[in-house]
Length: 118
Image (tube, rainbow, N blue to C red; front, side):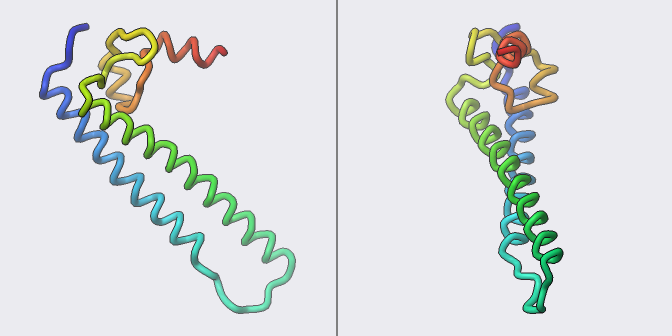
């Protein structure tokens, strides 16, 4: 595969920017949800346990979304830097099908498979 055309690169940029916006909204919603205090009513141990579980679940989801947001931002930086679409391990071009599925991918499928086996 040879260098990416400007139209392809612009399509990936748009996809990544849309993902970034969606993730920012999800992270914001998760943070807002964690800040809410349900009420001043008296709660028993089961209520506290349930609230704790829900907050921990929301924090976990939020962390996953934050990690994905970082991956998306890193991909946008690679576009700006001119290295988008190249595998960070072997330097070969990442297959367009992989970038369509995961526009923030930084490894070709072969290098990703090797990384996962480790």
